[in-house]
Image 1 (cartoon, rainbow, N blue to C red):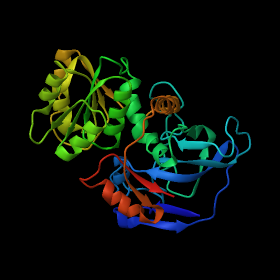
Image 2 (cartoon, rainbow, N blue to C red; image 1 turned 45 degrees about the horizontal axis):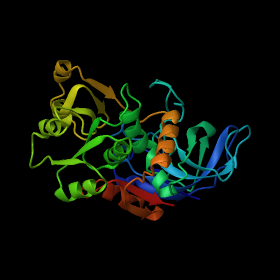
Image 3 (cartoon, rainbow, N blue to C red; image 1 turned 180 degrees about the vertical axis):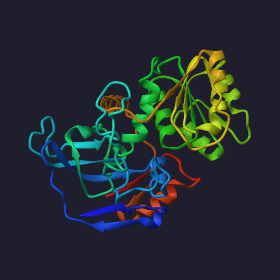
Length: 337
């Protein structure tokens, strides 16, 4: 079978290779999943460059946390799953429910865990979730990291999003667009930012209520607060240090900023503005199996379709990496197997 590998000590995309390996079989408590599609996240850009947690990978590693497929074999003792079930992998293999905890890992696609970019992957039975029935494999492959992250940010905090609430999403990457779709389905008012008027037109076509071009309106945090009638209830903060100060400007009194991203590494990170507003900053690092289950049920109930920008064949994986890192990205990049 085919399997992409990030070679030990990798420092660039050139250190990735497509290999042929024997097809594995599941052991006790495991399932074999024939992968039909995978998607990329920002995290996946860092790993082959040696910039992820811990630096360069210390072993040959199959990349990508996000994938969906069908179960083709069950190991001894597996219950509640059957051959032919359509499933998606879970980013954290051991976080089943409850709050964040130090035993959540390992996370797929980085050592010591395997990843999804292979024809057949062996995972623990508790490391998969049945995918939304309304989604194709391509669409379901967009949810394990980006979708669960967006869901956690909006629906798992102390004040879940619903009618009468406002949401600000930054940019048009996978997490932000999925957050916008979840918020709209929940009945919230959604504001989105981008530096591209063309992309802002596309998010308005998805139903987003207000848009801000942050190049033409540099003080976009204050503008978002104004559009929300004095402050935004939920800010999905994917930018990191370079955008946090503006997000604090945008958030409402008593509102919440879901801190997700590290796209920018320098800027004003003082939390004092939160004190004045009585607002909170909640760290988000994907989520649990229970959150994934609730997300897939919500997707089915509301007919949400993840926005797929481009699809690439298995052999074109490195081109998928390059496109996902480009300024043209709008939504998710999928690799089909």
